Amino acid sequence: MHQSNLQELEILLNFYIQVGNSIAGKKIEGQEGIKYAEAIAKKTFLHITSAYSLMKGLKVNFTDDTYIEFIDHSSIAVLVRSALESYITFNHLFISSKDVIEKDFRFHCWDLFGFIERQNFNAESEDSIRRKIQEQKKIKETINLIRTFDSYKQLSSKEQRRIEKGNWKLNNKWADLAENAGFDRALFVDIYSYLCSFAHTGRLCALQIMQTKTKEEQIVLIEPLLSQALMILSKFIIDYVFLIPEARPAFEANKDGQFLSHIWKRLAEELKK
Image 1: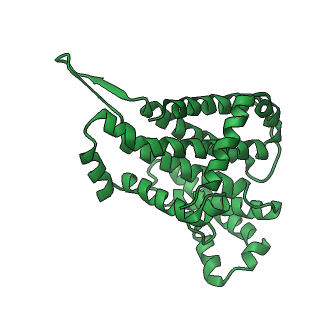
Image 2: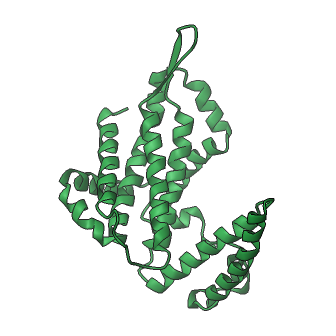
Image 3: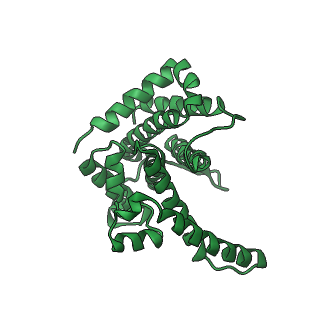
């Protein structure tokens, strides 16, 4: 593992904290649902921070004074996958479309999915049952709102029904959203399939675990994951500042963070299969 890359990830993580803290306590105005942008941003950041922590290695001590040292490659892969999905969702909802009305439409579709998703959970307490009943009304209101958008009216009846059942990606696949976010489609499909193998415990995941018995072998395997984390975080930071201009002064004041963000973002968008 290139130690310099790990150091650059640490710099970018601290850079995002600095940029985020620069708008702490300020009321942020913007498009529909912008308050959720911060939550998705935090999710992306926490996944990458956790992956960074695991990349430095773990040491487990036993009661007989022995210990093992290892790098949890599988967990890092799962975290990078989650960070990638979080970033792509952030980009889809708040960045990739230049049309403000289209952004609002996308947000309401995503918002609807959240209410529908919770309806599938078992409710046992009185408070949970009451909330589910209240949100059934909210689902109807949100569907009626979505139906007013031209983007909805232009869809086929089948596509409209899918949206009303919670298909917030608007009939897109993750590869479509990734391509809209600036990633090479073919390369994304390969990387995402690889990461999914660890989330779903595929054969590739089991095979690599069997083949990496030493810490040195594990270090080799996390190198591409480290690069992925750097590319996701850099693109995310630049998108975040684009969405929230109030954070730009802090972004521009840190020349090292700004430089690394642009370098890794360009690499993310220039890499091809």
